[in-house]
Length: 163
Image (cartoon, rainbow, N blue to C red):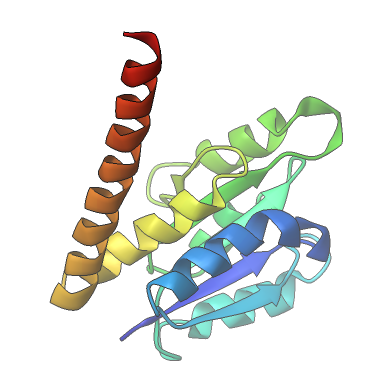
């Protein structure tokens, strides 16, 4: 199975990124976590990204706050799918990170999830791997069913209380 790389621009992003780590682990998807800054360690970020395919990665998650463009810098150095997580930090509540992540030029796509949407970033990568992995596809189906059952149980409780 391909691995997922998780790159964050700063270790202060770890509380958000942890949800991606936990989600990948819950599906037994192998991953690595790194701190590389598009601005402070651009050579290291580029070197890691350029070698990611050869090192067995199937996709890269890139998380950064403020107006950082880590996901774009990563995507510029690979043709692997890149999923950006804009992290809420600073005074703009993540809007700056969202715009820096989602506004990519034609030819360098970055899939972007919600601000602090690390679990969805991991799930999107798992869905990509599941295209060719029936076991992962079944696990995703099972999760969706379990999530639906939880909502329906909550609905039944609310209906019993109010109807």
